[in-house]
Length: 322
Ligand SMILES: O=P(O)(O)OC[C@H]1O[C@](O)(CO)[C@@H](O)[C@@H]1O
Image (cartoon, rainbow, N blue to C red; front, side, top):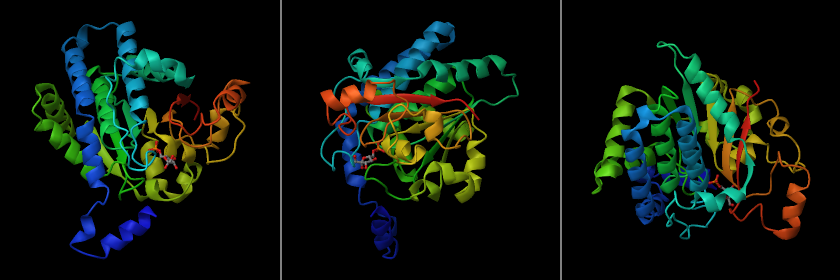
């Protein structure tokens, strides 16, 4: 459907660049303004003392921002059928209450990759994290905040974002959305927001924050076929130390969208897709889930029949093997 909409527009200049979902995405950004201010303020305060944080404190901050990025995935215009589901509550205050809804928590494994690579790094080495983006609006801000923290803490030296070439699943991020968001922050009437926008623009200019897009992300293939279907993209991802896949649709494509038993290991469901250590930050909106403990899924089926599609639960799921 999204390709059809794109096709209809692309053949009809001057509408060929028109994004029919732009209005919804812009509204989602402005409706989440208080949450965005809270996040930008938190980040700027954190950056003031980032050099003084010890390893434990750095880990705590990383876990917080990773969870913020996970729950940012609740804000999605395809899930809410275009209806209002913006981030209204303060994202930092709600983290403790949301913790019980994380069904798989592999944050420690992700941390090990980052801290070990920081410790091993010489001044010439690059540590690269790739973030395969999902929704624009509030979720994208959470991803940019996480990226800024990773760079500023020197846990990594480069962040590569991957977005969609055409408007997709209503609110998915395109290059236009990415650039628009950074411009909006720069010119915002709030000093912390504008400082974030200026820093991020600076990081783009320095080449440590890079935006990529590729048609593969809007083709129907499961990710285990990437090496054959899009060898160039697979080779690009192989340069990464950690790939973060955001959102439900990416999870479906990681696991081949099959009706797996809940206890099947994530590694098995990836079906040999291992360009680099990878993780998924996803709130559950569709009926595929792997890597649960025995009985965990069955218990939820009984207590909450719509647990897989209601967007209330989340996973931080990691696979290290190559
Ligand atoms: O933006 P996300 O997290 O990828 O969610 C998209 C999901 O929303 C839906 O469009 C509706 O739930 C699913 O088909 C799809 O997997």
